[in-house]
Image (cartoon, rainbow, N blue to C red; front, side):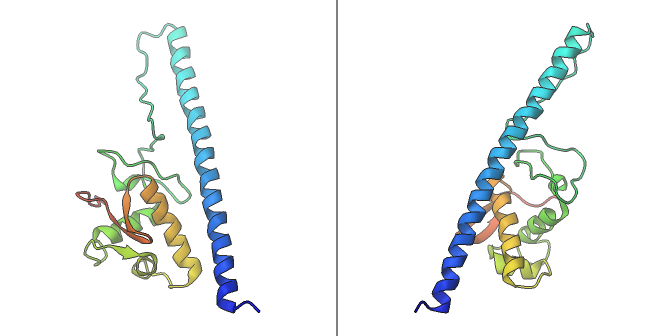
Length: 164
């Protein structure tokens, strides 16, 4: 007879595999979306030239992904970090997470695991909340905002601080 812990671990592994598969699918969808953005910007340039406009708008096409200049709202995509990019482009939940790791909430800029991050963000340390924080932290790592010091432990990238 399998143990409760063993069954729980099996379900946890299956859930983690599903999350990883969905994250891979999301990355693919974002790449397709980015190609459409680039295509639309290119068509805009071609049409501007065809109209005989003296002044062709300068469009900078980001290799990583487009970045909004205004502050992002809930549900916004996380842009890839690059020099000059301010934490203000992040959605509020992501901004708070970066702020906590940068030391803005008394953490001192140390490495924190997801449970510690959830508590520092004022969330209950229940699995659903901790997994939500883990997902956001992993997305910030993938986009270059944070680094994963060891599995499940996150910190700011060396030499970079929050500028909120």
